[in-house]
Image 1 (tube, one colour):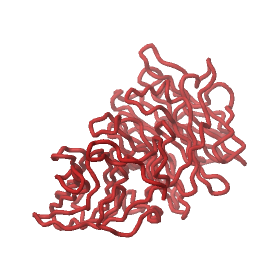
Image 2 (image 1 turned 60 degrees about the vertical axis):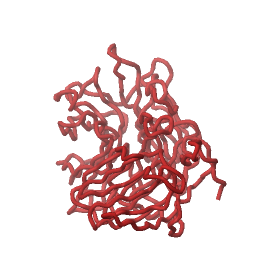
Image 3 (image 1 turned 180 degrees about the horizontal axis):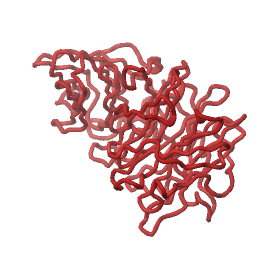
Image 4 (image 1 turned 180 degrees about the vertical axis):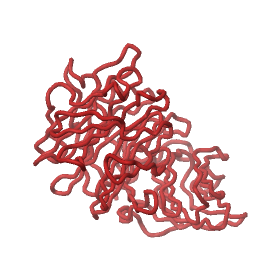
Length: 460
């Protein structure tokens, strides 16, 4: 349902599908700690496999940083594996070291594999294949040249690459852009001016390109300041690109697009955790979240919706307490408070509440402590709420709009209160792919009345 390897956290990732239809994820991995050093801890790619994009099996490390003296000797960051011939190629970020002011020196390298399952990688030489061009991009302190994504060029027989970069013509605090490069053979690249340079973004990370069924292009980019991601569309790869607004709310980051087993397009993204498993802990590198349906249309901006593939993991409706559950609530009556957990088992005040107040959605903890908030374009009439342990997602009128974390409270029957009148909210309990796995993927089980973690449930 969510995934991270034993004892580690997931950061940026890539998805691929083997010839037999089995999925694999390659991901940056590092210890689960508040003091995260991405130069010393993100030095390898973990790999996991799945038949359905929901239940993931750890498969160990698939790739690591280079030998001393090479462009990737310090760290390897975000990658993009893609089909090439009968096997795969992979563009990936290498970090050679630091500038005198301590800024990571980044470039993009190439690796190949004869396989299609995300294993068996061998480097293409010892040098990068494409580096930032100082005519358009920062190349030393405050540089960016990472997170490559490669597609077939729609104006020739070659390849095109987008890269997270920093526009040299803009002040550094708003220089986040998507760089563009082309190649006839993946080895020799020509760097061009930015494909997208909004002028109001600090970092535009993890760019993703997807060609839609009508031949147009969709670009997703993660925004450093908001910790969410946005969408752009264009009739051709070279543009013109139109900004379509936010697609993933704060807390959803580093998206990837892939066909689901049913053939529909879905988006997976990362989500954070909190150090110490408390509401006051610092956010840290997190996990892979469950898929969302990618909805696109010529007359409306792209959005993410509930993926029906998750329905097979849901039980029958109940009004009994459930820590992992999905509930649908009619909120067309105005101000509605939805209690999801309480401060004590069987009684006590609200510990986790979702409030719909006009266009505003608010999540609060014990004593009304603010946890998360978002403002919608218009008042929603229905909400779908998902809780998996500490993880909370909200869909408003079918659109994914909010995600947050809450480690407080005890499961309770859900109730919706409008103008002093309360009603029960039926929920469908959510079954977990592996509820007994005791690693960084384990779901927070909720506190006991004494504040100690509950014992692990037995395997179903």
